[in-house]
Image 1 (tube, rainbow, N blue to C red):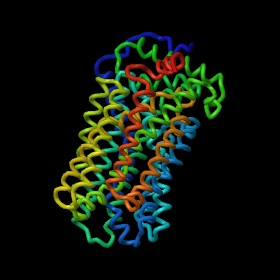
Image 2 (cartoon, helix red, strand yellow):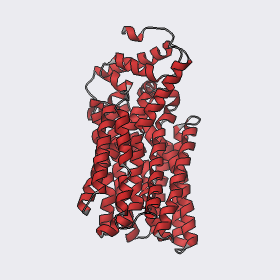
Image 3 (cartoon, one colour):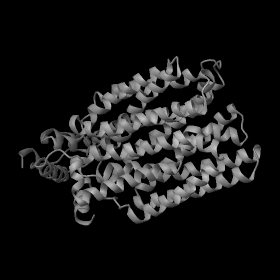
Image 4 (cartoon, rainbow, N blue to C red):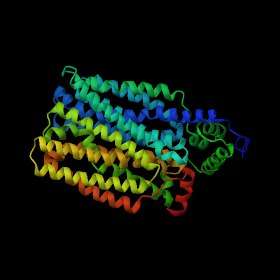
Length: 472
């Protein structure tokens, strides 16, 4: 054990502790601009799509391609960025992603053809998928175990804030600018948080757990000292020692990857992660996030009224996420996820019934809006924050980036299928039958969560790894 992890002395006074709290808050705020971009870029298409479709004369198939090209790119981005972050570091990957966000946004804004729009949205998706994996991992590895759930889910708060920002900007721009190129103004707004993310991450530290995995223990301890709110060095020493011992054990093996899945407990965790990723998407959340304007228009709103009504979806998503962050400090991940799935499944059933029983008009439109708000309250207050948190927690350090990247890829591929086929399903059958299908899938998701998901609350990442080795 090195000298720097064995010293025991007071860390300092209350002002030092306050500076550490500020440092952790700054790291959380800056890095979660990646979540804000994730939310804005996935939400903005909800309002921009009708104008893009009119500008480029899109068919239902090409509309689906414009929407789903981002999601397909996100699947690839999640898969590649996980392994790359294991090699090059979480901070460096977030810096690269901020530049890809900027390039993809500008390409989409200035697109002159459908093919250019699809390619630019695919590039943007690479950044969205990468941010969905790397930002929660970075926060989980930075956070003290006692507040890890609340800290990591700040990224989910920024995602839904980005979606609310997208819905609000869409409504404001739609009622302010001439219609000809209205969608370009909606898309270009995302350049601002992309630039802020790049500038901010230039001065942020690297993940202490990643530093330890590379044998850079002195730097690891310096980062922990920077972000831990404690008055006794012995507590920091204990965490640094635990992180170092596990890192040294992992360094005796080759870099984590597919061969690690031969180990039964790791393979089981990986399959649980894949299941949780699928569960989050088959609720049908992105049918509402991507096509909410069309759903509300089909129910009885006109386009501009639907854009304004979508703001209610964004507001409830943000409020529900605040509630979710509060609950994560008080209840377990597993009961939260199960409650959320049951709530979203019930809301989907009711949307299907209303769409089938009531003809398009003010009553149906109002009921569908209230049910989508209810759906999002359960989705964003429980399902989504627990999903991203659990995927950031459950994997062992040596394959954390790789495994999160692969499960994130699965999540985005399922997202792609939902986004691509939603309009097709509505065209083939009906909107009510489509939501009944999501209801059946939700029942299967509830059964999986009940039988297979572990509890991860109140344990450090190293303690979780030791627990899973013994029990999974």
